[in-house]
Length: 136
Image: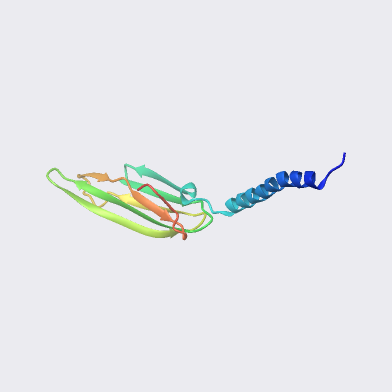
């Protein structure tokens, strides 16, 4: 079988775009693998309560490959028979890669005989590139 220049050109014309596309796809896949995971995938929030101590401890764990700046806010409301008072709490700190941070919400500001409510927290964490994870 004889291969002519025209046949060879036609075959290469069909193969080269596929080869070029494969190289571009491989480059794109490699670039994506180098990307840092989104903060939402590596920041984890949990909470534990202790009714006897009248506290809730909020936990933010950072499984990202970089440090994140986190903020958290909550309110403690003391409820008396005829009135109520509310204390707001805001905290912000750097949570290092592979570490966690805990924040204690306490009804210790309320008298023992008063009822109390601790609100659900509002939290967010940002990476240096401003990627954000939050419950807001």
